[in-house]
Image: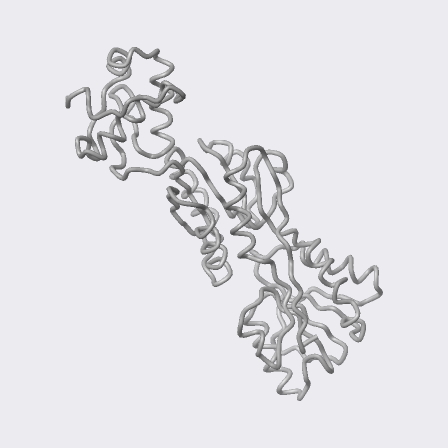
Length: 335
């Protein structure tokens, strides 16, 4: 066994007593006296050296485990699991996928989260097995878990097992209301309110066609569209595909996929129809290209940079808060 006294920092008067155990291990790693795989003193050794109760020592070891610094082998003891000196806050950040919108969110979060915070970013790519495996493997290694679950259901028990603060991102789950803080889109409300905002431009159309074929996309968007159409007397339809579909005058297409946007513009060219004149387009999620494509594509988008900022602010606050991220309707020639 290595020396029991290993450069431990003196305890501040206002610190909890268990921090003596935490400081002992962190100082040992910082000074090179503890390496990955090394065993640390037993609970009884910590009790004798620092005159602590068994519960206090166990609280310190639990804190170290939650940060991913140590792990244990039943009946043997505790050992160093990671020689990386952790920050005060060690964050597990799980996104559904990587795209330019999520990159904006991530960059904004990192810009505002502050110094001394360690963030590990993972992706589940809408694969439930990967999602479950990543969350399960991360348990006990982080102080904070920020999770973008998408439409996955029944995630409550998995989240409850996590030893740290949990935050939900982008897609709100009503069944978890009051249990976890979140920054999310309200897909139904956002679509409904955005269409109401653009009503004077939309009045010249007869039918609103929601084009959304991927299972990962939220059904709530169409629910908001149906509500809008019922109130204002428009026809509506939900389309899984627009391939080989003729555009009819008076159609307003609301598109989720940029591939569908390109398909629609090619079809319009074949039919010699102009977006914003014989038919209309609203595309989800704004990009610089959409500002100039076909004279300007109208977009309905959440503010991902604001989402990152709000998330950074939220993790520094106590209590549970559920915040709806703001939407933007950028009206351009296609409407």
